[in-house]
Structure formats: C-alpha cells, structure tokens
Amino acid sequence: MIKIFTNVWPNKYLKTRQEFSEEFVNKLMTHTNVETTDAFAPNDAVSLILLDQADEMQEFMQLHNLNGRVGLIYNLSHAYPWWSLIVDTDSGKGSINLLVSKFFRWDRIESQSILSFDEILEMQ
Image (cartoon, rainbow, N blue to C red; front, side, top):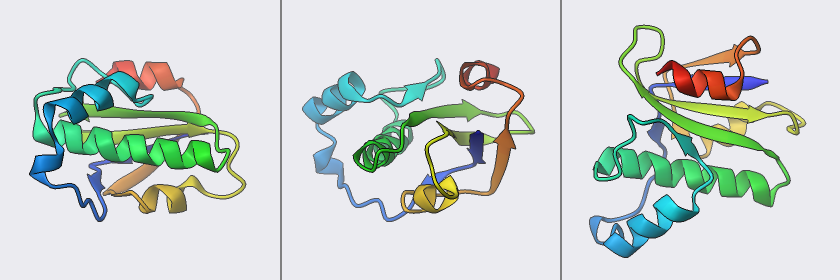
C-alpha cells in the first residue's frame, strides 16, 4: 500500500545552518535512497531539510526491517499542494502513520493502490 502525506514539514528538526556544509549536502545527495522529482532543487534550503528528514526516516525504516520506498514530490496542483511524502511499504505490521509522525507533520493522508510508486512520482 502506498501512502501520500500532503503538505509535509519536519517534526523536531534540529540541524543548524552550519551543519549544512557543502560536504554534508554532497554526501546527502550521493547516499540518499529517497527518490525525488526534477522539481527538487539541491540548492534550496527547504528541499534539503525535507530530503534530510526523509532520509533519516528511511534509515529508521531499514533499521527496523521495514522495507519500502520513500519519495518527495513538490507540486502546486490542487490535489497535492506543496511538498508530499510518498511511502510504499508492505512490511509494516501496523499503520505506517505512527512512524511517519516521528519525522513529519502533514495536512492530509491518502492511501493509493491504483498508481504505482513510480507513476505517483511522475505525476508532479
């Protein structure tokens, strides 16, 4: 099952501006498994904050044997405004919402079973 969390923003994000060095950004962009679209701007602070938080969430999922995919979409459409987090996992024993709430807050959640993860990322 795929979940779309619309208009996301990090919960309890504690990194400072100094921590976003060029080395940190390069490492994040090189090693993250979070999938993004062409709208992702690696020189935009908000994009990097969301990517960093999504990357930490995906690492937490892997640490707890929750296999899946995580993606970020920036979109101005009526259905999915601003930043949306896409989470695709079948291995969760319960709701993925509790895990996502450790890292993000959001306006709305939708479950998606018609489109694939890749098709949702292409929607932007």
